[in-house]
Image: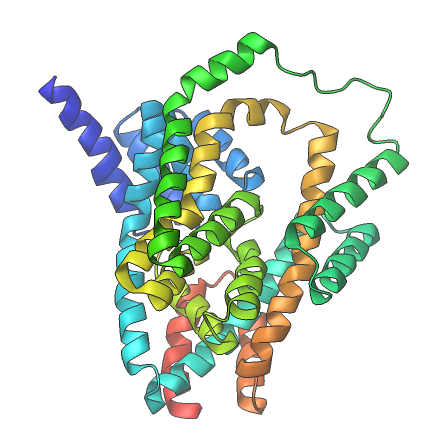
Length: 394
């Protein structure tokens, strides 16, 4: 029994904690080295399935991937433990960076550094827009969907409705192209026994969800801003597909425009700080939570943004893998990604107003964009170089 506990501890603590210090695709490499080559607990196919699933599930891609590996190793509990351990290094670093930012952020040299890094961050987001376009939505009709999404967001339409619009338009396009047959074979509804088994297998996930609702309702009576923030971030974590960057328009709309917890400059600086950590850009939720309600806010905000995707991985990983190749699902995902392009364009425009203030910052952004597009340079290296140049030039 003791040997089994120690083995579980090693897998879900030592190795996921180690992977939590890696940047970007390095997560996949370390997962291979740890769980295939060293521990021999999973196969290469498991890694590839995890990568594929992470690309089409809501939430931050690397959180989805790590949650799936945890699910394979220790079922539902493994998914949650893996996510929590993986994100802990980035969470801790983000707490430290946020504290230093709020205490020393107004000092001149810090302002110069953040100014330069914000310009670089604009270039990085533009590169993400280009990548989303090139990876599956590069047809005029999807650019039209992007434009409609951007217009509706400017008109302050509910983001969920904008997403639904993108899905419907993309599916209608698929029907028009005769790629989707409305008379053809459809996805069969699950049998009652299948639903009963799904509920039984995930009963404690459902109970955990009810527990979170009760805790959040308690927060509402004690500190309403925490409860509102948690609800918003949970919804964003549940609805956003693509990668952490696709969360930015949603977060900006809520925390900057609707609730004014952050200024657009603070939002931009939060993105910069999130890039310094090894975790996904969505770890800026820690920054938001700390700004709203200190350590307690940072903890609940971080859990709220990352828990939804892990819960979905635990519940629907296998069914989703089964249907992810279905034409209607494919077009729905293209519609979602097309909509995100429009939303990210608005984020770039908003951040640029406060970050691109002269020809120096514009040149910063342009050079960084050229590097991101035409080289394979690690963004962290660009950010480090940007810090040095910002101190001297800006």
